[in-house]
Length: 314
Ligand code: PMP
Image (cartoon, rainbow, N blue to C red):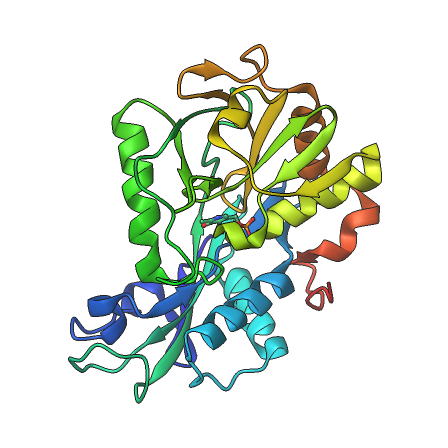
C-alpha cells in the first residue's frame, strides 16, 4: 500500500503533516528552486526506475547557487540518497513524479535573497502522461515572451519564474491548444511551458542554444544523445525562427513530464503531414524503453527503487 511521505525540515513525515506557515518567504515571493524527477514503473519487472537522479540533483544545486541559496549543507550524494529513500518510503507501483525543492523558509516580510534560512524538501506523487505521446501535441506560439536571463535566469528552475510558463500554458489551453511555444525577447523560439523543443530539417536535429533562455533540459540531452548514437543523426544548436517551425519536417518536445512528444500542429499549421513524425516516434520509442529499464546499455541512467541499489553515478 502506498504511504504518502515527504522529506520536510530534515526528516521523513507523513505528507499530510508537511505544511509551511503562510508567512514563509518562498510562499510570499516565489523564492525557491525546484526539480521534477520521474520514476517510471516497469510492471513486468515489478520495479520503479528513477531517471537521471544525479543530473537533477546537480541542476537543483546549480539553481540554488545562481539564486545565492547557500543554506543547505547536504552533499550531492546525501540529496540523491534522500530522494531515493523518499520514493522507496512512498511505495508506489506506478509512474511517479518526485519534487525536490530548496526554499527560503524564514517567516519574515521583505524582498531579498540574503540573510534568510533555506530548507530542502521532497515529495512524491503519482503522475501519468502530461501531453499525449501517441496523438502528439497541438501547439500555439504564445503571446507571452520567455523571460530573459537579465530578469530571472531561465536556466535555473526558480519557482517564481514559473508564472511566466503558467501564463503561456493557460493561454494556449484556453485557446484550445495543448501546449505553448514561447519566443524569447529577440523573437527566436525558446521552448514550451515545460518542455524543450527540437525540429528536424533535412535530417538534422536543430534545437535552440542555452543562450536563447531555455532550461538546459535533461530529457533533451538524453534524446539528442540517443539520436546521435542510435540513428547517427547530426545535432545543431542554433537559434530558430517561428516560421522555420512551420516548414520543419518534424518537431518534437522533450521534458521530464512530457517525455518525448511529437508536435503535430503549430498555430494551426500542420507539422509535416500533420501526423507524429517517423524519426520523432523512433526516438520516443527508444526513450520509453530506456527509462523503463528495457535497454541494458542505458541502465546507468536508472536507479531501481525497490531492489535497493546505489544512486547511479551518471
Ligand atoms: N523547459 C522548462 C521550462 C521546463 O520546466 C522543463 C521541465 N523541467 C524542461 C524544459 C525540460 O527539462 P527536463 O527535460 O530536464 O525535465
